[in-house]
Image (cartoon, rainbow, N blue to C red):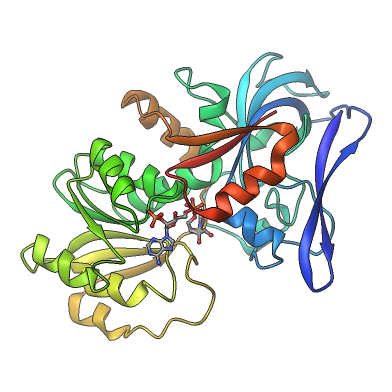
Amino acid sequence: MQHYLLEPRAGEPFALFLQESAEPAPGPGEVAVRIRATSLNYRDLLVRAGKSASGGSEPVVPLSDGAGEIVALGEGVTDWRSGDRVALTFFRDWLSGPFQMSYHAAARGGSYDGVLSEVVIAPAHSLVAVPATMSFTEAATLPCAALTAWHALMERGRPLAAGETVLCLGTGGVSTFALQIAKAAGAQVILTSSSHEKLARARELGADETIHYLETPEWDREVMRITEKRGVDRVVEVGGPGTIERSLNSVAAGGVVSLIGVLTGFDPPKANLFTLVKKNAELQGIYVGHREMFVRMNAFLEQHAIRPVIDRSFPFAEAASAYAHLEGASHFGKVVLEV
Ligand SMILES: NC(=O)c1ccc[n+]([C@@H]2O[C@H](COP(=O)([O-])OP(=O)(O)OC[C@H]3O[C@@H](n4cnc5c(N)ncnc54)[C@H](OP(=O)(O)O)[C@@H]3O)[C@@H](O)[C@H]2O)c1
């Protein structure tokens, strides 16, 4: 079979190359999954650049997100059958309950082998059934971006309620899932983008209000104008140091800012955190989610007939082009590799 490897190189981006190897067999408690599609996340660019919090220093099979079918069962596996359609979890061992720092040791495509491979061996506990309504290509977009948005909006603290307002930044994977989930939950969505064309697509997907964040650099003021000085109940904060201050300005009294991303880098934010005190608001760190959340999310996606937004799909042989496409940031939604 064929799989990719990402190999650290001193002082430069990791090298991505294709390798041949013997098809592996599952051990006790494991299954073999024939991967049919994978998707890329911004985090995969960070791993390749040696900057991901869950990245390692050893060569690794890249990408956390994949879906496929079970082709072999190891001894003792009773909860899956050959032919079952599954997706793999981002954190191999975070099944439920509070996060433990030890889970970072098995973050797929970072500290632990990922899914850019024709066959992946996985512990039977680290899989979820994919929604029957979704293709493998669609299901491959769920493990990181969708689950992160779901965790932020529907799992931590109190779930988003109908009639509340959500602010989504940009039109990448996490933000488009947040938009879709929030609309299905009956919320109002304000979304920002650097492109008028993408803002129009976001409105087609249900965004109620849109802001061009380059033309309106003080977009927090615009959020306050739109919400008649109230602010938003939730912010899906994927920007990091360059956006956090305005996100804090945008949140309503009693609202929640979910700190998720680092699209503007890793510098320590210079935001005034006392804004949170004044508003009795919360700031919560979100790192993907656990398997039980993934199962609940899939039921919700199926119930609301939510289809992931796929910007472009590349063949397995063109993994480098898929990375370049994601890096170019012209995408809306998800970038996928068919295996
Ligand atoms: N904590 C977690 O568990 C977790 C999970 C997934 C992702 N993340 C992080 O969340 C971020 C988003 O990930 P992703 O995979 O969704 O990324 P992505 O698909 O690559 O999103 C890229 C898009 O982000 C938007 N963007 C870039 N700079 C922005 C800014 N200053 N303000 C507003 N939008 C901006 C742009 O949208 P427009 O083109 O529309 O302007 C860009 O196209 C990344 O930092 C990633 O590392 C964290």
